Amino acid sequence: MKRTTISLIAVTTALAAVTGFASLTAPDGETTTEAAAPARLPVERSSLLCPAPSSSDLAETRYTSFTPVMKDGVNEDPKDGAAADEAAGAGADTAELRPSAATLADPDAAPADKDGEDEKDEKGTADEDGEAGKPASDKPLLALKEPGKPVSAEESGGQAPALVGTATGRLAPGWTAQQTTTVSAGSGRGLLGVSCTAPDTDFWFPGASLADKRQDYVHLTNPDDTAAVVDVELYGKDGALKSTVAEGIPVPGGAGLPVLLSTLTADPAEDVTVHVTTRTGRVGAVVRSAEEDSGSDWLAASADPAGTAVLPGIPADATSVQLVAFAPGDDDAELQVRLAGATGTITPAGAETLHVKSGMTASLDLKDVTRGEAGSLVLSPAEGRRATPVVAALRVVRGEGDKKEVAFIPAAAPVGQRATVADNRAKGSQLSLVAAGKAAEVKVTASAGTEGGTQVVKTYSVKAGTTLAVPAPVPAGLRGSYALTVETVSGGPVHASRSLEIAEDGIPMFTVQTLPDDRGMVAVPEAEQDLSVLDD
Image (cartoon, rainbow, N blue to C red; front, side, top):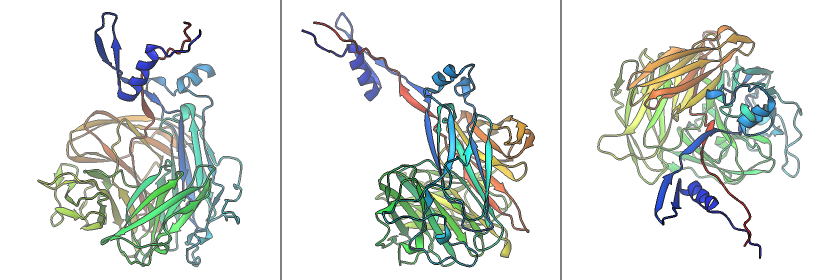
């Protein structure tokens, strides 16, 4: 009789994968327990989604794609193709951003205004079955060739679609893409920057608004072939806002969909928290905000709800800073508000704490809190209060009168092992590094440029409780734009952001992107399997 059995090694492997430990019985009957230390290996596939940049005919958009070189030669160019495949754990090395099948018009949006700033003009339509049209081109807009060397492409006008992208092989770990748009005039004028997002099923956006002077859209992009179904919840200062159209929003496969927030509810609300979840599928989500008198920018999702939050990189010359926070759980949050500056942490006078009721959006006007010294906001439980998870974001204004410009800074996850932001320029790029707890040392690598240059590496020490704001290091002989990669060398957690300024006609146009861990490495338990067939 022949019987197939699973060996002891295979059984212990399964246990190790689930619990991290393997219990083995020795020949003498004694049981020993060994910890299975997980190995950290590079990811083999990454996805990114970029929203449709603008509907303005005056829009000029630059896309930049980059993958950093990893340590120990993991994604460096091996001597031969076979070694490359073995190092990456997969086949071909690709990283491409392609136009989505369509960027659908928001069916509930108002007609386009004379400046073309309404998303009704977005390119693309849906057919009778709700399916997106064919992509504008089968060719990628942007294709990355190798780690360490960024590439860029430019688009003009208001017909640029959302982009969907995938990276595989040695281009996948840490792959990032940046979309930067300049609109020189009109109600949506400004510098709009966003790091293209990975698809997910849950996003929080405190800092949105339904105010008359603002037009806020949540952009939803579906990377998959099948349709996604999305719910959009809105919360004001008194709780959830009533809506009959925010549930079950279909986003066709491979398409982008902008949704005007003010069409989702009749309830008025100055400060709003937007919660995007999917019933089926996954999407990329980001909010685009345009103000009548303060320009426009993208509001990226806040870090996951947590008892503490760090919002890095408030400019030294900020003329108005507003904090918006939301407590998604069952408990209220009592938050201590502190500003980490160049020399230490202070409590802003008159803005020491913020009470956030469960399920309600709270705001705090911090005015010109930095007063000429760049800093970062640190939120933590007030003295004697327990930690309650919150999400948060800052609305930051620079300039005055008709020369104002707005940008948003969401709560950021720590840099962790490594984080990268693309599309830095020779002038106007500033890096903010925050050590909210223990002091830390970080390494910053400025990559080669998109058109030439040699990378530069610098190491910075960040004192405990401070923000180190420095001009971003620039590659030697830079031509084009470049990427910045931040790595934690030692010490406590570091939070970081990059601000990019492109002044125009006296307007200090700027945008801020946070640098969370790129998750280019994953923990994989070390295990062995013996699937041999035994005869009885």
